[in-house]
Image 1 (spheres, helix red, strand yellow):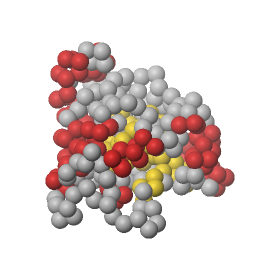
Image 2 (cartoon, one colour):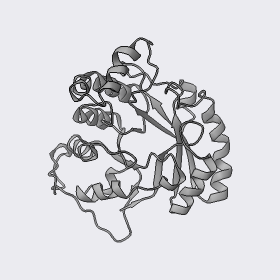
Image 3 (tube, helix red, strand yellow):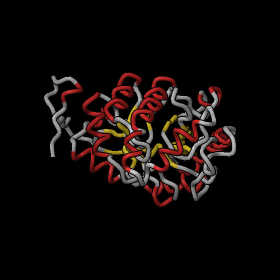
Image 4 (tube, helix red, strand yellow):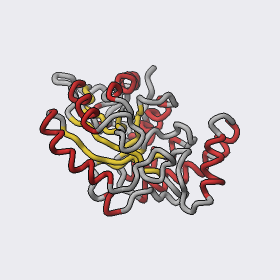
Length: 266
């Protein structure tokens, strides 16, 4: 299986440490066919883009960079879920222009209404060090992320269950219905096995990305590829994968089984 694209990277328009050109050049060195520049939405505290118009600025850069480096450059956004009803922090007119739309839960956003920042986001921040509090917030977090999946035309959900705990099976079920993938994010240490298992149980697609903030991390997808091999996930279930020439399908289950009946092989 070949992972041909990295669809989750950040530039210095948000909290990345390099320019768009430096990130694209890094993708070319990795031999990627595609790279997506997906800076944080504007309601991310201290790290978001200054305004949603930044994505249009990146769009103007995409074609020249694609031509210069021989890599297809996509422009997307890592939008923030800002309410329990699944609202995200991008206007519809910007969303329509994006190639990739990610939504994720982040414990450093300004919510709508603003006071939810205190009774939803703040407890999640504290939950990073207080396990019981993290578990208490799981229901609200799951509600918000599932609502975002159904409400918005997402390409995939970013790093589910990273800091803000969610019920991965509920998220996977929503993704399967909405045609949205779940991300294996190689840039963070979290329950990536749980993400793969939930996606396979519930019939959701997967995608593997680096979440790179530095050029050296662009296309560093080895940890995700290892997980796909571990669970023998077929390329057809991974948005940014294609079968290597000559490889036959390798399923971890009887091909007549329903998507919810995977048997995990260790």
